[in-house]
Length: 364
Ligand SMILES: Nc1ncnc2c1ncn2[C@@H]1O[C@H](COP(=O)(O)OP(=O)(O)O)[C@@H](O)[C@H]1O
Ligand SMILES: [Mg+2]
Image (cartoon, rainbow, N blue to C red; front, side):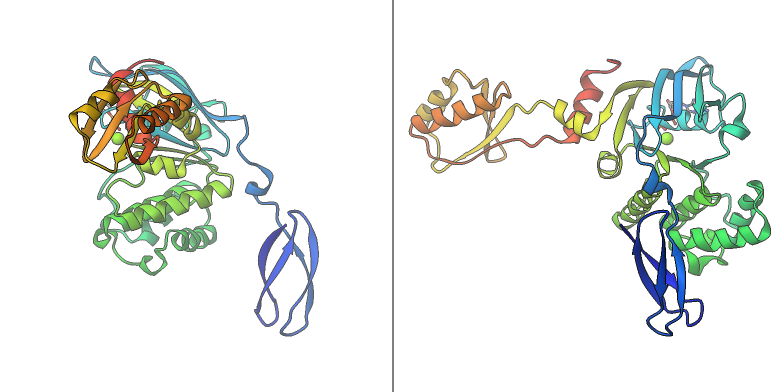
C-alpha cells in the first residue's frame, strides 16, 4: 500500500489517496465533493529492486598514460538498482575508470559495457540512459543554471517545453529553484555540486555515474547529496559513485569495490566486509591501579597474546574468538582483579581500509 497526493481539478485541494501500484481508485474531494478516478502509477522502485542483471560490466580494463599503468586489468560488475561505491585513495584510478565508463578516455585494452553495449564502440547508444558527474570546475561561470541546463537539454534532444519543465523539476530536487536565473560564478561549492547533479539527472537517466560527488562539501552539503542519492535509488536508478570517504559509502552504498594503485583490491557488501574484519582487541578498565604483580599475572594468562596500556585503557590482544574473550574475563576476575569495563573493539570500515591498503595490495 502506498500514499499519493492528488490535486482536485476544481478547487485544487490536495487529497491523500492510498492504494497499490497499478490500481485505480475513486477519490472524493472533501472540499467541493467532486468525484474522480485516481490511478497509482507503477513507479520503477515499486516494480524493481536490485536485480541480478548487470547494468555495468567492466572486463579486464587497462589504461596506460605514457607507459604508466593507471588501471591494471580491472574487472567488476554493477547490478541494476544498486548503489555501488568505488573507493580508493587519491591516484588509485577512480576518475580514470569513470572517464573510460563515460567514453572521455579510450581504454588501452579491455572493455566497458553499459546495458551490454560497448561504451567505446557505441558510446551514443551505451550512454543514452546515463547521467554523469565528472568535475570540470568553473567552465559555466558566465551562464545561469537555466542557460546551462537548456544547453544540456538540447544535447539530449529534449524539446523546449520538456526542457523548461525538466529544469524546474531538477532544480527543485537539488534545492536551487530560486537560483535558476543567477550567474553560476557566484555559487558556493555546494551549490555548484548540486547544479552538476541537476545536470546529471536532467534527462531522467536510469544510471548515474558520479565522481566524488561530495568532495569539498560541508556536512550539510554531504547530507543533502546523500539524501538525493537515496531518493534516486528509491526510483530504481542504478548508481556508481567514486569516493575516498568511507563514511560516505558506508551510509549510502549497497556494495563497495576497493581500488588501489590501479587494481581492484577487494569487493563485497558493507556487511560482508565488516564480517571479514578480525576483531582481536579487548579494551579493559580496572577499578584499582594495577601493581607489577597484577600485570605479571595478566601477562601469564595463556589466552592473552599481549597486554599494554594505551590512552588510559588496557588493551588485550587475543585470537578474536568470542569463547576466548569469555575465558579471559573469567580468569581476570579469578585473579581478584576488579574489572570495570571489558569490551571488544568495534569493527569499523576505516581499520579495514587501512589494513587492506597497507597489507593486501593486489590480492584479487
Ligand atoms: N591524463 C593523464 N596523463 C597522465 N597520467 C594520468 C592522467 N590521468 C590520470 N593520470 C594518473 O593516473 C593515476 C590515476 O589517476 P586518477 O584516475 O585521477 O585517480 P583517482 O581519481 O583515484 O584519484 C594517477 O597516478 C594519475 O596521476
Ligand atoms: Mg579522482
